[in-house]
Length: 446
Image (cartoon, rainbow, N blue to C red; front, top):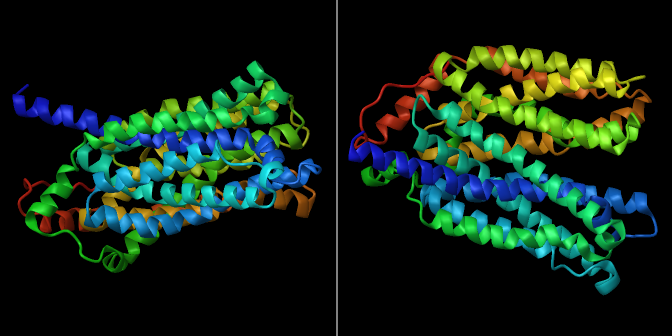
């Protein structure tokens, strides 16, 4: 191996570590908030009515998702104008700082109605920063990976997201076991949020040592960075629409496996807490394990046909999951749950790579930030609410299949109309705007 190749490999490793550490913090936060929602509800809302306080806490959780597109619109163009690295530093400071701030907020007993207002404000800042994170970090990792490695490299962002949620669950539930529910309710719930402070400082230090992605540096050297990426991105309407609909299934199945199914098993199917936690852990880890393998497969054999087959299978598996729900036991519910989890892992393994390959370098961060965050808000963060509403409206616990299957069909249609020329257009535009970069063949992973 030459000195140059060693340097490139070292830069790639640093970029990977720096990017994923901050990403882990984002999803760690979502994990701890979800698992500690009952205690947060009691601390910040009407503690005399447990149902109202819990619903209020989850409403604040959902609100952060609807703020994400605004964060994408703000930070996505920054990533394309001033660079991936600087933007990642800004969103990390906001993300870690706001998570840490939750651990310091006064409760309703201390400041009355100001407490939930402050909580809502901080959660909006978290959603805003999360919306800015995804387009920039996905572009950063994909551009360091380069053609032929984007599936494997970007799959680790999804692995990090799942592991962040699992870590949040382990920390939250571990503290409940160690301290007891009374101590957690009395203020112990603050500890996991305060941990985000030092974690964020470590991640910030690592990210400050990074260099911007080679593709973006080539754009800067050529003087071809976009001056108005938010306006320019709308000349890429077809790729933006394709990303939107391909991510529709990605969003719904993600929050089915990692959030809704836990509540569904506990509240609707009346499984005991031990079974529920074990099943969610098994499903999450299984999904994470298969993600890098799915990414490697699509790097070698192409993305479209793989995602199409997996998308069809995942849609069928989600129907199976809810079809067996009436009268389900832990034994009968496990097979469809694991099928959904593994297929989720395989589908999500390569969707990030597809996004990066459908949009050219100069507006990639902006395009992903918009086309990804909107379906996540509509079909991801709202999935538990929609599924719960369907059950209440129909009186049928299997009825959520309507929503989840519909999201699967939308993505299947998008994959059917996806063409090799869609990838080639973005690859050729990237080459045309970076004349000082090494010539390379258009990478159309169809």
